[in-house]
Amino acid sequence: MRFVLTGDSDCPIARISLGPGESVRTESGSMVYSRGVEITGGLNTKKKGLGGVFSAIGRSITSGESMFITTATGTSPDGEIAVAPPIPGKIVELGIDGAHQYRLNTGAFLACDETVEYTMVNQGIAKAFFGNTGGLFVMEMRGAGSLLVSAFGDLLALDVTPDEPLVVDNEHVIAWDANLDYHIEVASGMFGFTTGEGLVNSFTGSGRVYIQTRNLANLAQAMHPYLPASSN
Image (cartoon, rainbow, N blue to C red; front, side, top):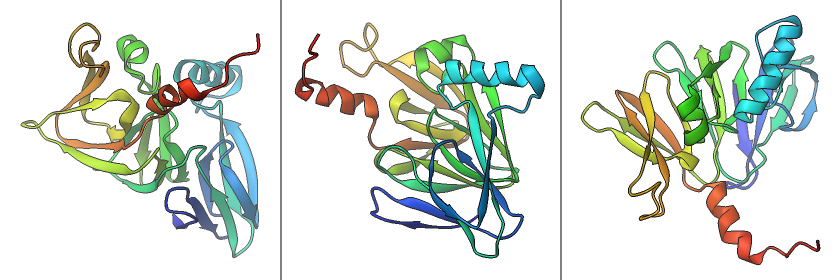
């Protein structure tokens, strides 16, 4: 993927160059502008027909991901599409190959090469209802190429080894190596009430976890006292 990041470092956009016939997949609704590009949309599923429709609807409800995914294809030598996430923060490129395949938290996906395949993986009821990490389904990226993910705040990479597991607040998880094992646990006390940390994700094995330095839940909570009261 040929791209440049422009704009403020905390609110960038990714400008992706596309030659004739070259394509990228982007998150639905993320386009800022395009030129020399044909835009098409499709359901966020690999299934065909009516089954695909119900699959996309189900995944949207259970994971919070969009029902649709956009494909941009170059129609001129200097085709370009610019995309941006809905929240301020960093955009980072992750390389996808045989050794590096990632699972993404809800809202992390921004764009990927057409050669990168994605599937929606069922992560189990317990993780869906208690983890807040993608809902019942998480997006798993495979194949070969580039993947763009977005983070609220900065994005940091943390390594996990068999001797050094990692515990991360669920709201800060962006992406993790698909071969890592993870489970949901309480930080401490009764649902974390004694420390205020609540539920966390415990990663074990060998791989890398990408985290964002801020989270929307904390921002919403901090802003709550300043929001105007309802008129009802």
